[in-house]
Amino acid sequence: MMNLFLPLLLAPAIQQDLFIQPPSEVVSPGRVMQHIEYDDAFSTGYELDSQGRKLGMRSKNGTKLDLGAFVPGGESAGLGLSANGRVVGWAEDLVQGVQVRRPFFFDDQPGQETNGLQLIDLPQATEGWATGIATFGSTAAGTMRRADGLLQAWSVDLWPVVSQAVPLSTPDGWESEAFAMRQDDTASATLVGGLVRSPSGREFAAVWGGPDGGLMILPIPGTSKARLTGLSGSKFSWDMACGYFLDSAGIEQGFALELNDPVNSFVVLPTLGGSWTRPTCISNQSVWGASEDAQGRSRAFEFTLDGQAMEDLNDRANTPPAVELTQVTSSGFGFLNSYDVEENGANFGAYSRRVIMNAWPLDSGAPTNLRFSFSGANPSLVEPAAQGSLIAFVFGLSPGSTSVLGIPGLFLDIAQPQIVALGLTDSKGGFVHTLQVPAGAAGLKVLLQAVVPEHSLTTSVHTVTFQ
Image 1 (spheres, one colour):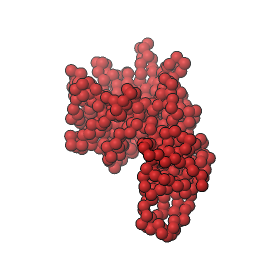
Image 2 (spheres, rainbow, N blue to C red):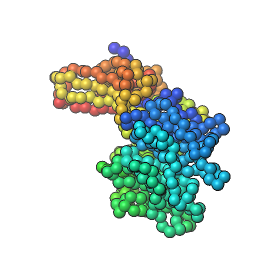
Image 3 (cartoon, rainbow, N blue to C red):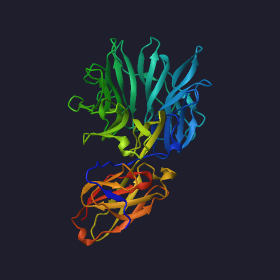
Image 4 (cartoon, rainbow, N blue to C red):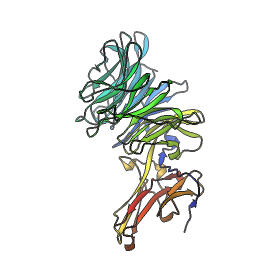
């Protein structure tokens, strides 16, 4: 039997289950601010031209579209993205002879193709930007600079037509900024997260649309610069939030909390060995963002809320040594994160998929189906590079650390693994193998894992007990 594995006595088990899309699909150079997949795969952000100017873009199933600006040759950037490819952000416009950033809504859905780039009307200002849009709903949010020079958070209704932006509740003489926005559909509440700033300059983390529907200033410790940067809101569970604040030494510390009980649920996030952590997004299970490691580098992280575990996502990604994931910029369906990437000193944007496996049914003396797939709401959107790759299902009876031969740094989390099936991934990047389970396996606990050597990937361990 083919042997892909080498047992190790002392080695960390490093699960590499994040598939970073091929370099040809990376925004180069530039940033991916958000990636989302539902019926289609969309990304938004910006690219940099040869003069370093920002060019807003939206990608649909790998085909990029230049969003343009309100003035010829102006800069722009996409910052927020809905599941059907609508984009918000900022684009330069000419106002009284001066180029300023103004918020836009981009819509090219069927029947709306002529709308294109639309200006969001700011009743109290000319300069501003939109930072978030509903996943399936009808609102967006952002920040504007009023005529008095103060910053003001706002929200806007986008359907059936784009209305005027409405300022969000802010104490008199204070400033406010919007960094995060969630509305999963028109039946769920709109949540906007950000900060309010006192006349003395102190910043407080804030959320609009909380339990009372208005402004809630969160009781965050620290000296200043407390801000809310991520929301996990939905019609099922809207109350998780993340952000960061400055501690007494002036160092950024990340936090997570529940909005309905911010004091008792407050958690300060650890670092990756350095001094600071800056969360950017959150789900009901995890927090993501950037954190400093022991070498002083910015690294993309995931912090699991249940397990209280902090992970450097570079340890889980199939990236070459010269490529580093420096920050998670957004999270989406099925562990579809977007990232800031550094390669030999140059900055790029990227996104990932997670590889997963399962086994069902679990009846002894009967067939079971072992399945491998790339995560995502639409499995037909898996990159072509994932097709025709060798996949091996392995099993064992106890956890351990076993190296995959020929792939430095790739480990299985099973002691003495044995191959139970080999095959090639199909056009959707998946593989299914039907296995006859012996009748004597009843009550036996088995550890299952899949490995894709070509892409330096392993799934997490799937532990089953046959009935």
